Length: 337
Image 1: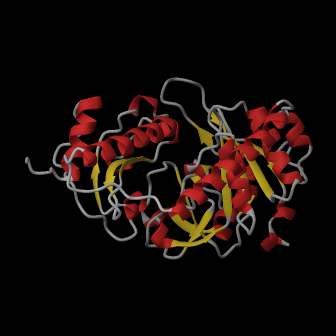
Image 2: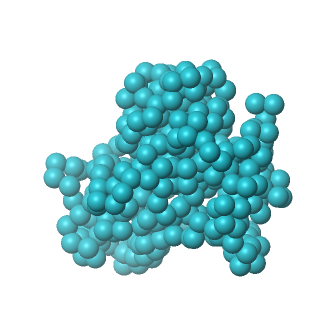
């Protein structure tokens, strides 16, 4: 009987057979460091080139953004931080699970795939049932789009005529003055100089900054990672392919049913970003927006998001655009009232 091969070797062979060589030079399987983003979910991980990199919307790519992982319970999967390829990554991971069970049954690999318990199956069934209820709730809302002008006209705070600097001040003013927040001109910036107090930024808006995050951080010399997270202030909802008017309709629908919508910002390109207060009950709306295809990665606590008032520049020659403030409701933010 031939010996079984390590799961890591099988994963490499499976991916190479499907996509060709995805390996990155001088990169091998390794154990994750504590508090290192997606790697926290792995027993072993290996940086690879994303098999769906052509779908990525950002041209700058960090080699660690896409990784092959093996978890403590023996599951193998691919993780990528780009939302644009999330559907294909999810489909690929399903194929990997099926292939891993088949290989284990054929006595090919060393590590058995994880066994799903009855409790896990029931939890999955409940999640799927809620998913379809949320999808059914959203369908009639999508038939009644809300224009951006209508959204701005309904803003509790008057934002018409605001300059870009005033938009940025209003956006940053949603945080407490003493909050340590992150702003940068690129989503990959994590150096300490990008952390400042919200009150300081409101008085001196960082007009070069295009991104911020919906959370506060502990250590100004730390990084924009979970181990440095202080408080999650906002959950950010974004859909890259849904028309803006339909996304706005869903945001207003959720707001009318209890979600605290503090701000809506135009990304300056294809989408709008809704900033909702992170509080008890927000998970219900997270599920609602996920059922409509909103980006799960944008909802992460440390994920970069567009900062209102900033100038968005394109590398393909398109003219610059302003990331416009479309809606502002400071009364929805409990720590401001």
